[in-house]
Amino acid sequence: MCSPHLIDESMKQKIAAYNANFRKVTASPFGPHDEIGMLNLIDATSRDAIMRRADASRVFDLSVDNFVGMPGWTAAGDPTYQIWMTHTPPGEQVWNSMNQDAATNALIAYSGDAISMYTHCGTHIDALNHFGFNGRIWNNFEVTKHLGSRTWDVCGAEKHPPIIARGIMLDLAALHRIDVLPPSHGVGAKELDDCLRKQGTELRPGDVVLLRTGQMKYWLDTPRFCANSPGLNREGAEYLCKGGAIMIGSDTLTLEQVPSTEPGNYLPVHCYMFAEAGVPIMEMAQLDELAADKIYEFAFIGACIKLRGATGSPMRPVAMPLRD
Image 1 (spheres, rainbow, N blue to C red):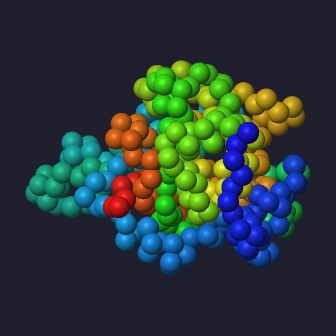
Image 2: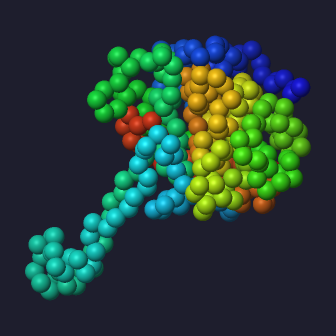
């Protein structure tokens, strides 16, 4: 059995997971208008405390490159990442889109491009409107009142503050002394507790928690990266959410164990974390450099693109080790 979280009663009142009911949407402990859930634990004091300890001489980039053919979520028919040039220097010699005189047009080498992508491509954050139950999302916002023709008008990515917080990484692959967790391996409470103990790492309320499965070893092998990811099961998600995690991320496509082992729900961890616990998700984080240096505690800094109403948004997070 895992050890209980040492969290006082006043903090438990701020952690939505303690009021969660199975497959029911939770009312936010931060009030009826709350749209960011557990990210409310970030405040001026917590930001200042972690930044005072950050060693900015070493910065770990936790994001992946976006490129044509990259792995991504396509199971539901969503578009892959695409990029194309809208202006090229030789093309402009013919097109002259800026309507310049011949000498000016010949002088300037103009390049431009555009992209098309699912908002859940690459390293990204999932907002709380991504999944819910029975037409409701986090904090009981309803589709009949808050879903427009284009987007939700609540809980979108633009509502997320820049996330500046203590981060911890749990190297689950290293726990088992293997390179990559097996396909569809489910990570539960005991495994998480064992990993914390082995690393000497403490989970605290307000933490960003990142899970390393080793799956990034297959990043350039799209079929293998995307098939039957190892990841959190509901029990593991409850353990971290009740421990006060404000965001949980991983180096996998889905964060959670795939395929689902819960009858009647194909992504039970997503539904639990968003609708019941109010905890956003980060997926496809590059954690191998942190693991190589055995850095398990750090300052986490990440902000997503403010896409109004979006269910997800690209993010470029970084980690900085902590001074003693």
